[in-house]
Length: 352
Image (cartoon, rainbow, N blue to C red):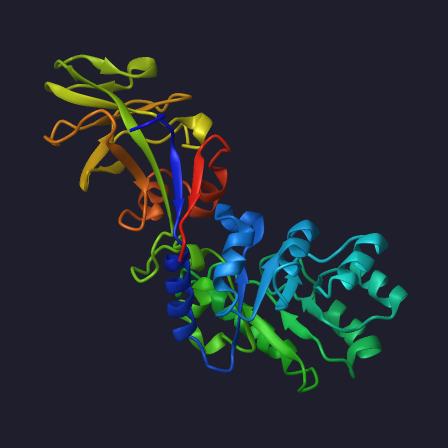
């Protein structure tokens, strides 16, 4: 070990494998849009685009700045998924040939003002109740302005990862009912990762896939976590039965134990409320968090790991230890954990 530091290793080969697996689940006629918002969920946006551009049909982001970064290195379709909210942003989006989502009348007024009806996606609220037109509201716009225009009709599922949730059936019915009222040249898009895996027949013309690309989807062993968060052991000590470890003495030793202190804490992005018993991996052996996470370190029970020394790495998640392991046991979600890793963690993007 040289300078002790936490590391985030990013493996584009796994991202590619995840994409190819997801593409195998959908119709050949469906286009694949990689959702890479928030710096590709923490995986370094420009690098990811470079390494997947040959196997995707387009990209989806939320911020205009990220869309422009992608345009500099890719000629593929780029969708600004929450659209624009000003005339200035609309003109910048046009300059960079971006597709726009329109989800309310305010945004549609900008479209009407500029009389530009190309590369538009209209978002319909079918039950998520965050963004999107109500059906009747959209039909009024359609009848007045869109009946002879090509566009993409889209919606967003709220519970696609739970196949038997009634909301899926309700949302599909509302989406199908509305799309059947429109002219036949429209395109359709409703499928995210969960929809692809649980309702592949609903892949339609475009799928929009985010978390599955990076291995954060729960319930599918084919999708691997594409990043490794690891940090070295900086101390090992033995404690006796009855001794406590960490702030507030939360962790109580019920026997003689061996405790490793790991050079990673909540200042690195490790959630401070991680529970005792949460599994990590050291030298291919499972070990358990033991004691509260501090700002710069955390403590792990390595009593049963005989070959364990200062400088050995502790992995919190990796391709061999799904990020869903730590999130599911701590009331977290993989999206949150991927993007919360702080700048002082050394990012290492591997070559293909």
